[in-house]
Length: 182
Image: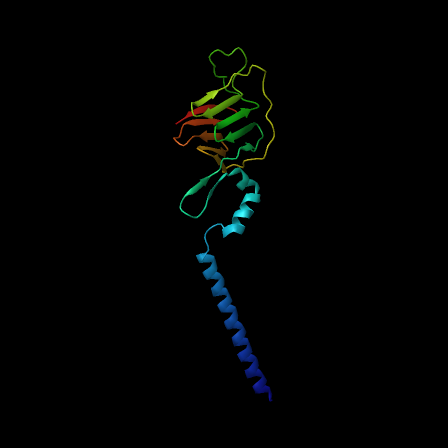
């Protein structure tokens, strides 16, 4: 075979190689476009193992209905000053240090302002008869992230932790202030 024949053969081989590469890239694009968000079962397993997803306790099963988590979730604000525990019964948050005037709790002889709860009755600060509770370190809920259990959702932001029920009733808790919602 002369040099020209070898170059022509190499050229065809390269053409086939490029054509196969183009077809593989197109197949990959089609797969990415047609796969559901989250990547199926493996994507869901990967999300379950990530720290943010473990705090986000809701998922979409892909059948148009949202699966609501019922397992308790505990988290702390990025500063570690606020820690919350969530369950299907409600939310209980503790703040270690605050500068707002402590709210009054009817019938309370102890301190107030460190513990706030949200449940089917609404939200209220709790009486601290046994002294100021310690904020227990737990996994962090990064700013911009949410955690949900049952009808309750808490969001972490630079303005504090905001927790609400399905109707929007709840509270925002921060070192400088607390607010009733809505």
